[in-house]
Length: 196
Image (cartoon, rainbow, N blue to C red; front, top):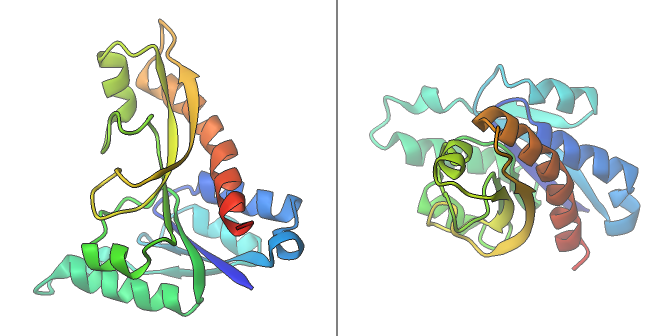
């Protein structure tokens, strides 16, 4: 079985979109694949509730618990890897996981680690993408599914969706329209990798 481990920090709407698509398209039969675990760095992440309701294993590795370690980021990533590896992941999918991962973590899952970013990369890596797109006068914004590399938001692009920036858009209205496209392209990109 090709196990998919999804990492979240909040509501997990992209995770939910992947889970629903996996069920609707019967990935277990089609690709011998399943979402085997959802892991969060925040105990109150609402996405954990969705995962439990869909009988998916959940875990919380709180990054704040490592704050007093000599190398807190590395210690957190080591604990996260230990939890992920319990599920023998074929893919590790970042779905609103708000942590910058160490080079060691990224190297450990090289070729198996995916992310979705709310801009048309390589434009606007990092945070506040919608505000930045509006401020720059962009006519189009969108979302990008990409492989994760050690450089933030710069891995090889797997899929993109384009959304027009409307004259009266705010960061929130643009974000909402981009998110609807994220929910379409992320499950599709995951399925395409499972099919290989």
